[in-house]
Length: 538
Image 1 (spheres, rainbow, N blue to C red):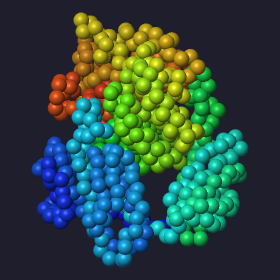
Image 2 (cartoon, rainbow, N blue to C red; image 1 turned 30 degrees about the vertical axis):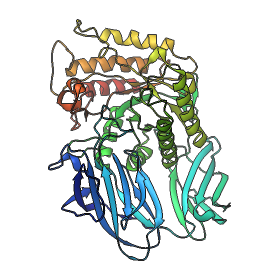
Image 3 (cartoon, one colour; image 1 turned 90 degrees about the horizontal axis):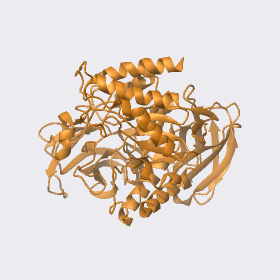
Image 4 (cartoon, helix red, strand yellow; image 1 turned 60 degrees about the vertical axis):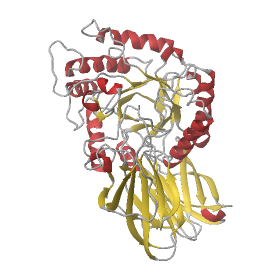
């Protein structure tokens, strides 16, 4: 078995600002990894180039893994570039020859300036730093570079294992499972693919999130992975998990916490998921970017269903229709699908949040992304969240029709004290206009509330107004069979615009639609919803 070396801790650091760094680099500070450097002085709020460095004693062929960073970076080994991280939040891995055993220099040059993928108008803050753990491990000759496990028949325990090995390896491989099953297969020109029936298997679901384990061993390498045996499909307006209709109930969640930014540690992720589960929910929409490996592992073990999507928030034509932008989305989709392929928690893969899909060229983009993901993983549902509602012309290209709606908030009559009465009629009209042969999912709905602001008139921005609005939305979603579920916007207040005109709609520079504030202190809506969800489940 391999022995990964964890590189978290204190790294050398240097801020270069507008000047792109070039070797040799002078270091005049230190910083923690994981961590976001632009959250504290003297770098708070600054945009530009920053350099991370640490030394590693290792030799031979290695695999370097970075569990997400932002906004983009180049990675160097002994001052020679070995790769790049082009997409914020995306877990990345690099395979290379480290050279002879000695003290080597690992350098990560980060640029946290907005670019053609992460735009400054996004309604979530672009943090600069290394968000997750960094590890490195020696790998042998003909190393196994990928193991994918899919459920082919959940009723019989039939699975498919596909694996890749370096250097076009051909040779025997043994597969052993936690159930005691052992089998053999072959790598041919670096590829292995076989189907196996697992005896005494257990299904993965929200109540019993059972994970099986596979160990794959060759003449030179041994790797292990966990997976779940489960099946997700649609039937009319329902989503089925292992043949049973399931209602998705939960929130959108940003990877964000004060003083930590996007570098949220696993114990804080655990707190969030236990709060969500204790409230009676089973679903997280990972907004609006790839999710960290640790987060998905927690969701696997805790039975939380996940929607994961590529980074692409409100990208409109002509950028949306450009071949260059489509290629960035396709590359993200490929990376994301393969790196989280074995996580049973992921039941929906998404892309292009609120893209204004109402033209024929946009259909070509949506179809290309759908086809790319489906070709890699035909066992997962695919969707995108639309804010164009009845005018959207791409619903037929997805497995689930998903809409972001804000009745009672953005569309409210400002002469009225409350727009709560509009919510149920609005959702009903929307549902009636949707395709009737696909599940209808509310992927965003909500209202801003400032923590501690209570008002007997239940005016907008009060905790009372938010609580009533979300209660109406959830009652519709839970009590009507035409709706497959709801992901409220959103779980906890998160940092957003700090400059520009949009900041005037974001008090404190924060999106305040969370049912918890940024420190996870519950607002009134949290308690109201918890009481309702518990009574509904009885």
